[in-house]
Image (cartoon, rainbow, N blue to C red; front, side, top):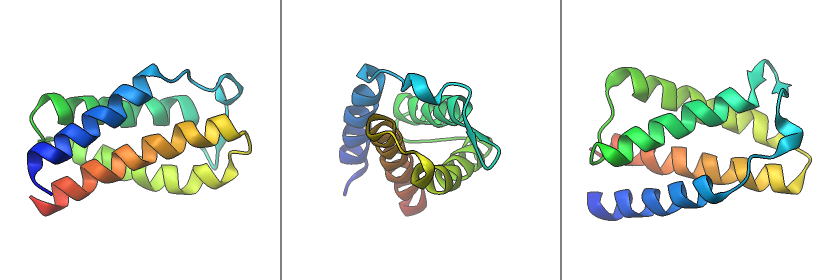
Length: 105
C-alpha cells in the first residue's frame, strides 16, 4: 500500500472515531492500570499528528503510539459493552495502521 493510501485510510478511520461518541460507561475506568480516557486521548493525539504531518511521527510519539497499541491489546478483551468494544477496536485498528505504515517506511 502506498503512503497516500495509508494516510487516506487512516483519515477515514480518524473521522469515524471523531464522529463516535465516547462510551460513557468507560469514563474513569481502568483495566490493569490503563486509564481508558487517557488511552483514547493518547492514541488519538498520535493519529491526528501522523495524519496532519503527512505520515510522519517524531520518536516520542512513535513510542507513545507503540505503548497505546500494546495497552489496547491488553484492555480490549476486558471491555464487555459492545459499543465500547467497537469504539476501542476502531482505535486499535487506527493505531496498527499507523504503526505498520511507520514500520514500512
